[in-house]
Image (cartoon, rainbow, N blue to C red; front, top):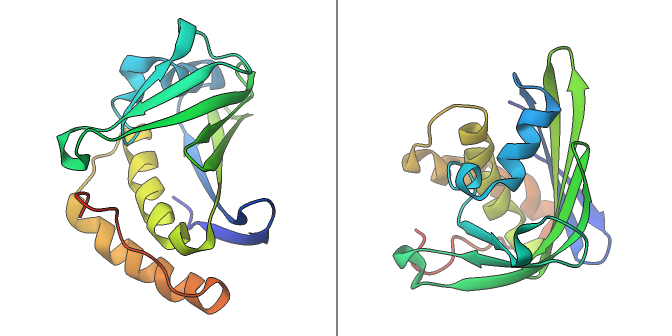
Length: 169
């Protein structure tokens, strides 16, 4: 597991980048990124693709459960090059996944282009999600220390960091 890194600038003002070495080849990881049932195992919400195909222009619905009062965010597929790269909007953010062969496995790179005030929150959240994708477990108690660490790292550059959205504490 590698620590999230921060860049500034771009259309949103900031981006966080996380890497994970995964034991499965890119074709298997691609399915984990694009098949609804597999996404449910690691992504923070249910993902519904309009028309069922990950292709540029396809609409996305991100359906959160009762803990977020049934929030539904919208998005759009920007790029889908199987099994190399996937990019889509997630509400106001842009998520970019790059898959590169690494031995018999995959190096996955996630870049989240976002508003500066949520960088620490999202870095901590994506660490937990990628841990699940890598076959680990998520302990809800680990989010807070990760958030505090990223807040200390990112605040000098980005300013005050927001905690979790209402209902997601």
